[in-house]
Image 1: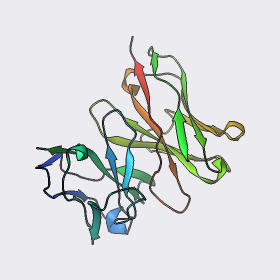
Image 2 (image 1 turned 120 degrees about the horizontal axis):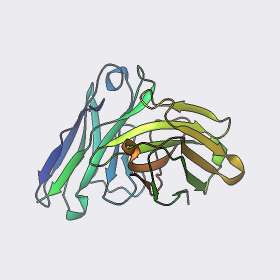
Image 3 (image 1 turned 90 degrees about the horizontal axis):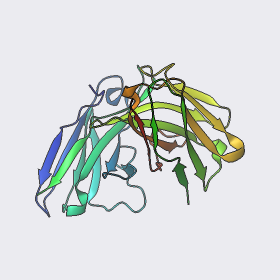
Length: 111
Length: 119
């Protein structure tokens, strides 16, 4: 059981918008720890997609956006493309565990 | 360009020892943390531990404390993950990833090292 909870899967047609939620607790998101998002394609290294809740590293398309409101965080992907089909993970720091923690991952299927 | 290059895939028997590596380049090795992240078959990412090469400060996941050892060799900008006695349950893909001291995210990541433990 992961410390951060994500839906196992989401799907959408090309061009559509999908969101992936990430739920934590009072010892991570609720304690003010930032959320970061990674895209993981099979057979490749995970790639940082969003850091500090809403910031995109250089080179990440603005189709990807992150938001945090209170203890609710999400990743939105607009204008879905076939190449977006991947596993997406949220990640934070848990102050009770003194550990970096990941969500269980969400498999995005582009229909 | 910042790069983390990991050692190749390993196939081992239960009870054997193993040390895999992650060599960094393109930045000042001693000034960034390097973490190890595990992905067991069919599972998600799991943080294992982290080391700061500057002073060798090391932290481990509470669930993995004592099961692995993380070390670093500053002379060759390389971080290691070591097991003294492998178990079948150690079969996984292992990634190293860099973390800035003032941040809590990981970027970039190594390409991964597949470790298979089977009798």
